[in-house]
Image (cartoon, rainbow, N blue to C red):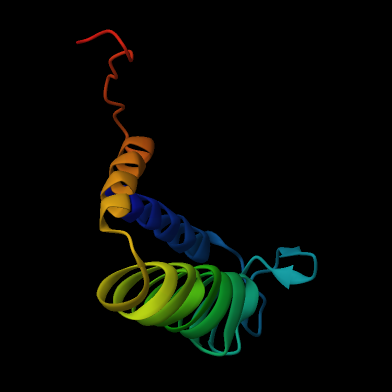
Length: 155
């Protein structure tokens, strides 16, 4: 899971950098730069809508950081991450949450998913698979690549 933590850290650092360095509209925190009609970054207490949306409630975007929000990728206390969601109460294809539903995969305390791991879960228990997947992700996302021995070399 260190690899996933690195990836989330890089994404968060990038979003914070963009949030600080972006020029905003005069009357609200919506970026002046728009793509397909939506601001690149939208920051609001309630109702932020943009490619990257940051706020507290009713937040919608592709990448969402919120207390309650919806997005393709969502980091929230409660919400929906259509592809990936991390939070306390989360629904998504892949969900990492205390309580939630991960349609394909769930990791958390209480929830359900086709593949699931946690304290009280409904789904196919996949502890061995998670251990293997964790090793593969760590290798894939590590900054240092370990040397591999060729198969069949006997060393």
